[in-house]
Image (cartoon, rainbow, N blue to C red; front, top):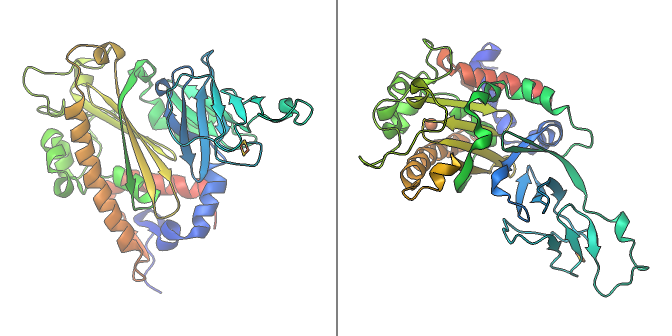
Length: 366
Ligand code: FES
Ligand SMILES: [Fe+2]
């Protein structure tokens, strides 16, 4: 038996990262028992719908014509066909199954069953199966649990760092761009990578050029108590001179020149950098694959402006994310080796240690 290091200096094990058994337990005890971030709500205008996959469950998010949000199982009540494939902004008030054309209102009510009489099918008893949904500052959370934990209590327990960013009034922001990528890595490896900056000098030369603290390996500035780190130079992320993006509304001078980031357990990161807020969500597709969605948010009046062009911010963040994704895939490959038992965590990995402990407490024993 190799020397065992104290708990908070060890990473999770190969089994924790890669086994189907652990993934099934995560689905049951974390993803499908609590709340998961699903999407930004402003992407769903009345009449729109989108599909999100929450740890293996396809969920239909809809906003009905009265503006109410719904989270529905993406499964037809007739013979079980999958109903919808992707985002649809048709603005139509109904969903039609591609198989026998049973049709549902956006709140899930079954409203039409072609070729069948009212006496053949009791439509009122066959609405789409519904999940719990909550919109908080524009973040849409879904719980697949029959009896989910109280939302505010759950938020306090699992998203304390997100609550600390409440003052940025993200509910007023709108999504101007969405990026999607698949990463061949376990979702926990991606969270851990986000939580440390010992890799930043090596992996992110462009990022450390604008956030010099990251050259030190620290991901937090211990001299500040607001969680921010200084941005130097043009982190307005590549704006050409004369094309500066206006700052997010209501920010102080310090906020405008700072970067703030947080994770919300289990599947969301938020990055705020003066002119833009980026929400990144992780959707595990199994222990070996994670879909990463980045939603870029700005003030609506900025988006509506004639000179609005988020391309430099999008490209900068996509570059940093691609650099991260590559090293996460390398870690996934490495921890797959039979030689790997656990990795080592150091004092500068404090946020990784915090995540590991939080995860183990939420998951419980295997
Ligand atoms: S399975 Fe959907 S209408 Fe038949
Ligand atoms: Fe990184």
